[in-house]
Amino acid sequence: MARRKKGRAIDGVVLLDKPYGGSSNRALQKVRRLLNAQKAGHTGSLDPLATGLLPICLGEATKLSAYLLSADKRYRVTADLRFETATGDIEGEPTEYSQVTPPESQVLADILSRFVGDSAQIPPMYSALKVDGKPLYAYARAGEYVERSPRPITVSECTLAAYEPARQTLTLDVAVSGGTYVRTLVEDIARAWGGRAHVSALRRTGVGSLVATNSMTSMADIERDCGGPDAAAALPAWLRPVSTMLAGWPTVLLEASEAERIGMGQTLGGYSSLADGAICLKSPQGQIIGLGQHKPPNGLAPLRLFSRPLD
Image 1 (cartoon, rainbow, N blue to C red):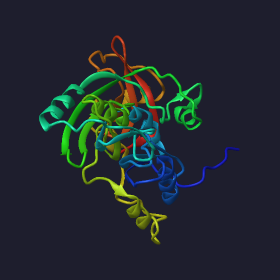
Image 2 (image 1 turned 45 degrees about the horizontal axis):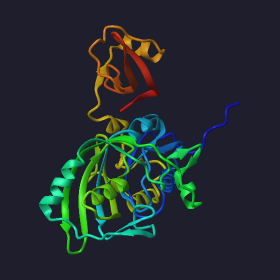
Image 3 (image 1 turned 180 degrees about the horizontal axis):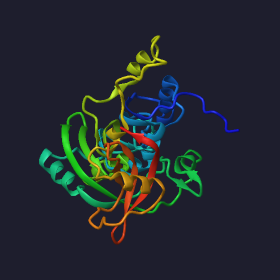
């Protein structure tokens, strides 16, 4: 007899404004516990010092987590231009101090423009990237050095939000491909003028099509709304539908017979003009039944299906 899962079967996403300090997993587990949800997952870790958008997927929405892990991200990052640290941020010990003054604004603007586009980046030693099954930060904490190969990245935006050369700080708005290390980007930018820098503040403002305007929910609000007498029955307004995660995705509205065949794992013909990548599949009633993908030359195949149609 199958064991019954504990908690509520809740489907949706919480756009958490992750607080400073503590891991992303700790924030995830706290939200899951407060909502008494059966299943939860997030769409990419933030460092403990980082704040901002951490989408927490609940129930069937966890099936979409992997597709946002590799999505583009947006950040506002503040850099201290006085020195580098072992970790690339304020939590590490200084390793190398700047020997030059920060550049003039126009020179800085020219430097920033050179970082926009495709390039390669060497992951930092203090990162969760695994080598031989062991995260790089574990080697670093043990005083071991590991050779890392450059990885392709894309910086689609790198604009100056604030610059105070007298105080040796600058703030950037950046949009980068998934897997880009902003700490390393900050170090590379400073080294481009012969300086040194580390991240002093980092806030994520976007994940894929999810943009943090006024849509995020604080942990304090979640604690408040989940602590009342009606919390066990009601679902809060900040619990967004699964469709929130798929805004802007290519979408196919299926006919009833097509939805039934897709649900049985069959490939549909007559879809020659589909884009590559995951495609949102909707029932004739407009509910999301899962994700599909183009199967050359003219097929639409199921990729990841939900156990039930969702809004």
